Amino acid sequence: DPASAKDHWTRALTFNPNHLSSLLALSQNLLRAHDTTQANVYLHRALETEPTAWRAHMLLAQADLLDRRNDEAVTEAERAIELGHDSASSVQPLLAHALFETGEKDRANQILQAYIKAHPKDENATHLYERLNAPRSVSVSSTGHSTSTVDVSEADVDSAEPLPPNWL
Image (cartoon, rainbow, N blue to C red):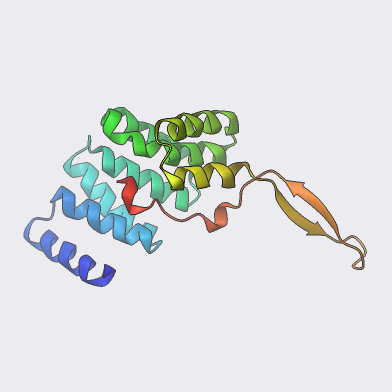
């Protein structure tokens, strides 16, 4: 239950306002609810507490991506990978998504393909790759009577969900 989890982590922070695990868990719950404003408050506290916490940088990248601050999302995802090394390999799909949104589609695809090759059972990454690379069809009517189909190569990021819990 997300509400009781939020209460639990909030209560833990009353005893120790800088408890990193509580700050990260609360931020993740807020991101699931798409409350990036409040999540950012806790994430910045987490980074003040532990500037080298790769998970905090990963969650901040996710918040930036949800808020369409794509360049910042790339920076934070790259920082998470730099700090977390192999432990942060799960950040690669997030980095690829952010790169795709900045227009670096080739680099995004290279990162995502390498990640999928190393993690073939990660269905979320495979789905992301397919979604980012699938042409969309958009109906266009010039006269209002006939409709033609135009292929659009950009992914529909408006429906993008936050990282699934198994990516932490």
